[in-house]
Each structure stands twice: as C-alpha cells, then as structure tokens.
Amino acid sequence: MDLKSRIEAVLFVTGKAVDIKEIAQILESDEQEVEEAMLALIFDYSSREGALEIDDENGYIIQVKPEYMDIVEKLCPVDISNAVLKTLTVIALKEPIRQAELKELRGSGAYDHIQELLSKGLISRKKDKNGRSFNLKTTPKFAEYFKMKGNSEILSKVETTRLAELLELKK
Image (cartoon, rainbow, N blue to C red; front, side, top):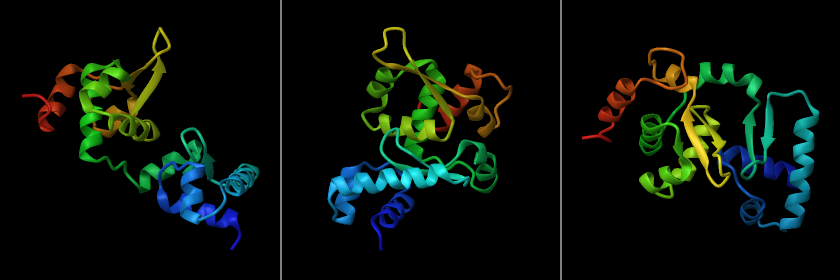
C-alpha cells in the first residue's frame, strides 16, 4: 500500500479535519513523508473532474465540492448533535454575535460547533470591524432547514425564541 492511499483512507474514515501530525501518528509514518504524500494526493484530487476535493483550511478533510452539495443534501439531510444545535440557537437568537461572546456563553467547544455549522452552511462568519474576532449569523439555509417562514437571513425573534424554548435554552 502506498502512503497516498493510506492517507486517503484516514481522511475518508475520520470524517473530520485532521492535521499532518495526527495522520503521521495514525499511520506510524514520518511527518515529512506524510506532508509530501498529502500534497501529491491534493494534486490528484484537484487534477481530476470528480465530485470530491481535499480541503486544507483547518486541517485536511475529504469533502464534496460545493457544486455537488444539492445532491448530497437530498440523500443525507444535515444531522446536528444537541450541543451543536444549542450553539446554533444561541447564534440565531443573538445574531449577529461575536465569536468571542459565543465562546463565553457556550464554552470552548463552541469553536468546534462553529466549524461544523460553517461546513453545513447553516451559519456565516465575517471578521468584525476591529479584525480581532468574527461575527456569526445564520444563513438562508438555516431557515430552510428548520422550515421557518421567509427567506431572509435574519429570522424573526418569535421563531428563534420558540426554537430556544424547545431546546430548553430559555426559561
């Protein structure tokens, strides 16, 4: 088995972003060799016209290219854990909310929740005015997913308050 194939197997099975160090540990391989093989694997994926790509924004992950997401969404509805759903509800209630404020409200696990919600297209993130944090808000896909009225990016407070009550976030 060549190293590229072994790395591809790791990326496929983990289903989350992993860094070179983690991959090297899993495969019991040299980090430099893993990095070289990863670059070759990324090139392989980018040079063919397939539906998959390797994203390297926050570690490496195999994912469906954006232009094929409509197919994936029909076959695999978005699955959200309770903790991530609660983080999403806080974002919807307080949007736009600074990422730092969300971390204070939901704890350090909120960073992982944010990454998951971004990857699912349920929230958007933009740098705030001072460039030190991000502002988070829901997307139209959020409203569509929860079958909320309207297509605007900012949902009515009545709808988000009702969602919070369902999740027991608000007394």
